[in-house]
Length: 139
Image 1 (spheres, rainbow, N blue to C red):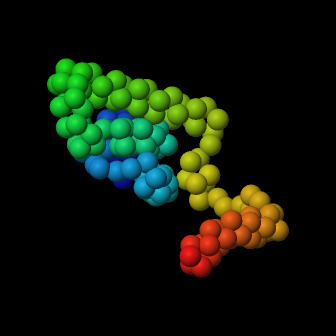
Image 2: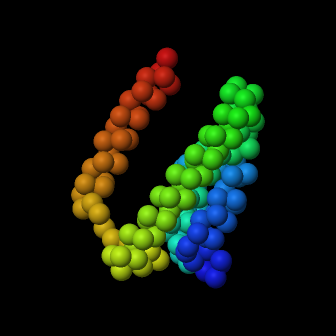
Image 3: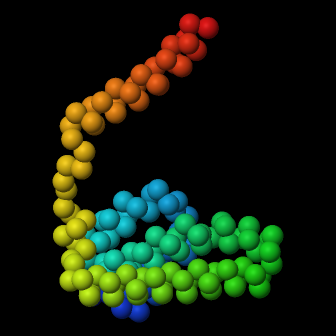
């Protein structure tokens, strides 16, 4: 994967080609993107996948063609591709200029919140969730 998707314009275009036909939502593309980075795909190519995948699946392109016509859909697809590849190249340049390895950042884990705040948040969420549920059960 690293030899083809390690960076550069070729990696961006390949990720663009891979992401267009996929019917992938934004929430499921995030874990896939993290896995791709851990496999050695450049952050810019992954950004192209994240930007173009949810915006350009076949189902939405068919709907857009029916609503807007072929010319407008082609213009939409072209603009999404150009913006995605431009942002991907800019992100790769940023990582290169800062000297950051994306694999190290993705694989790194750390405690962000203190444990008391985590458990307190869970308790508050449960309290808000249980009360409406008990009302519905008693009715």
